[in-house]
Image 1 (cartoon, helix red, strand yellow):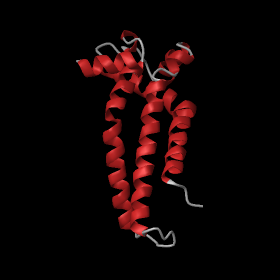
Image 2: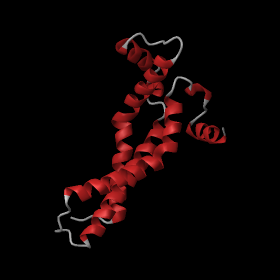
Image 3: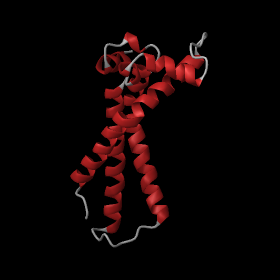
Image 4: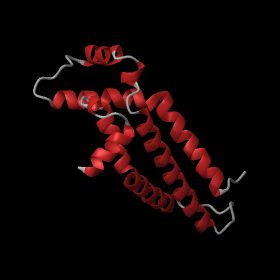
Length: 152
């Protein structure tokens, strides 16, 4: 079965939305908080287990800090990457799905698709990282963070 470009976009977007809800956001929040904490003058976290415990004590709100920004980031990342990759493969095949694409060509397509998705997602990643950081309390929400980041 061959998916239309719109179908591919929806599948990639679905994967990019479900991934941060189920796995990525809690792990990203922990990662970002640890990185920022370890770079501060007086780190609060005294190791992995106590640090994760401190973050979990903040509750779901603390663990899922930045969910909206992470969903936007991952959703657009996957949608951009897969749409570009599959579109290039379609053009190479000229509409014939039996055409085998050499692996180096697929690698080039993938590298370009990855470059596009990273470039498109960098602004969203800045917002996500700020919202998940230790100074997240200074932002009302993802939109407030976005406006303040791009204004400054």
